[in-house]
Image 1 (cartoon, rainbow, N blue to C red):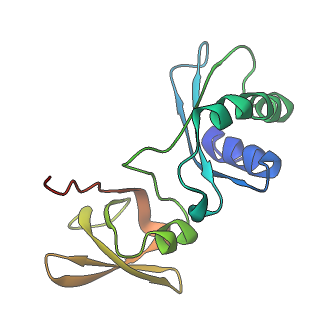
Image 2 (cartoon, helix red, strand yellow; image 1 turned 45 degrees about the vertical axis):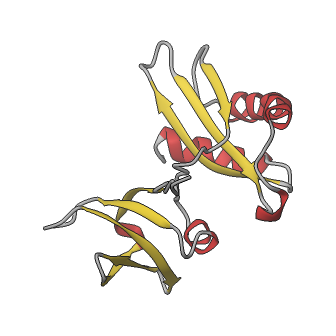
Length: 156
C-alpha cells in the first residue's frame, strides 16, 4: 500500500477539476490529529496565480475526495493553499514549466552531494539538468527527494 501522501495525491488528482492542478500535498502531525496541506494552482500557467476565492471554493471537493478515499480514520485539519514563491516541484512537467528558473533539489539515497541549487535547463528521459555554479548537473528524477523553486528578488 502506498504511503498516505501518495494516496492523498492519487485521490486528489482523480477529483481535481480540469482547470486546476494538485501541486503537492503535505501531511503533518500524528495519527490522532493529522494536518493535510493541499497546494493548488491553475493548470494553465497563463491564467496567473490562483485566487483566494478559488482556493476557498476548492475546500469542498478536496474534503470530499479525502473522505471518500478514507485517508484518515477520524478527524483531520485541512489547509488548501497556493504553492507560493518557493513552489514545490514533483513531476517532470513541473520542471518543464519552470525551465529557466532557479530551483533547489534535494536527493534521496545519493552518495556525495545531496543538495543542488541552480537554473533548470531541461527535463528529458527521466533526467533533470541543472546549471549549478556554471556546471551542468544531470539528476535522475526518481532520485529526487524534494525540489522547489528558489525565488529570486530583483533589486528595486
